[in-house]
Length: 171
Image (cartoon, rainbow, N blue to C red; front, side, top):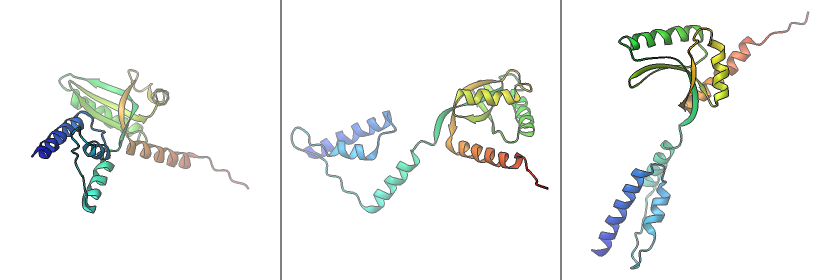
């Protein structure tokens, strides 16, 4: 009975710890549970192959899929028709600049259109300068960028370079 109480206490402490730090790894939890208490008790953890596979799958899902980056905000408003105006702005932007990703987001109380997927402030400022004449109130803002968006942007920029590169004919 005494060992069962220690197990319950250890599991409760671990669940609180997991809630506080979501990045905690399962292996660290196993190590913590298997440490001997002052009275010599410990938790022996055994795991079958299907559990190990499920644990590995969960670990893979929790790896960073987003990074801190920058986007350029070209529109934000919280007026009565802000959602409609934001939809119009993003549509116009996508028609003019189809190679730049654009996002319509509601961040209470504002509807916001931000564009680009930049890793640095400098990159965002350079991007902003390409369309500042169309959107003079644009400004860079720190946002979370999905890694998949970054790879899509770089693939698109390689394709654009290949398409727009000059051809030389030798006659």
